[in-house]
Length: 211
Length: 211
Image (cartoon, rainbow over all chains, first blue to last red; front, top):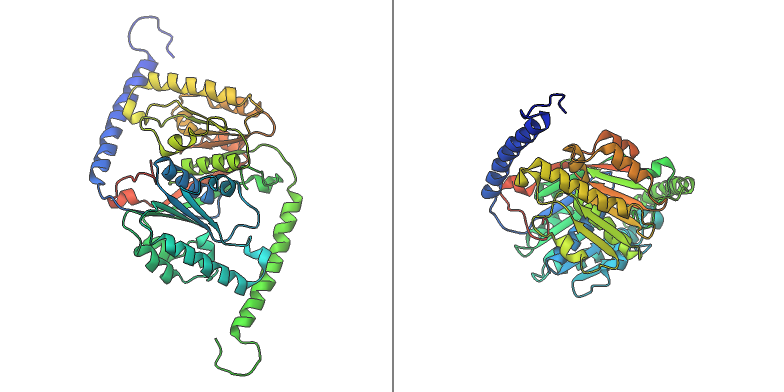
């Protein structure tokens, strides 16, 4: 704001001009990057870390792909004792989303390693079938990282199956503790870092947001 | 595996037992935490940072809430020049998801600050109406953080409107650069930290995964 009452450009006009000049430069940089990034192929996306949003980000990508008319596949490796909101919603669209819940709750609920290993192996069989189906545009392997971290599955076998998939198929893998070899094999990796969490403040896990 | 052929427990049985003991202890800790977290109210969730997955995490939470039969609202503050997969998908369900795209592409595409401010203010009017509707269980304000960071909207006004919402309503806010006052007002905050990105490796933004 300016105190003067004449017609010379005041602070806000100068601010608008500077903003425009900055945005013109930014557009040049972004456009050049887009022009140089021309390879089209399926990508492997990993969301890992201890923060919230790993699975919901994966489900958001499933919905995005479905919005483009793609067929999708979901395998949940660990969760599943309670039907989730995502499961209840996506199972309305069997023609566009093949949804498998293979785990039996968190591993500290089951307390039986041999059984967890057998469940993880059965889940990977379903996942491998999806990885051989070029009609599926995007697959989500939810909490696969946890199954790998606990050595329920062999990471090299998993990577070999991922590499053999149809060239345009996208894969999204979630869960804390992504193994380094899987990070190396992926195209895009995000670590979801917790800043604060409602749970620490005595707020119960909320239907809709966390389940 | 063990080379012995007698019936004493081999290494894998010992491993299973240790696993079980560890998981029993972990279950006690998790159950105690759940028992102490009993407050039920709507929460404010923020996904910020420079990594991928902020918006898709928000859309995942919308789908989760819809799976529980909740009505939801979405306001996109910045994106919108190209219809996204999420938009195309969620607009199939007008009775369960009220979807508004208020922005006009990224700000470096428009290069007009006054126009961006007017658009952001109109978007906040829609958001405020949702924040007064107790029939909406979860709202997503996608890329609101960017509108705040660029000072298109006043953060104190936004926080006051958030605080005045119905007590059980959840709010999800996405976008890089969440202002400190908003982080302070939120219940759960995650920073999405980039580890690697396909775009840096010359791979074009892919339909379904990133658009």
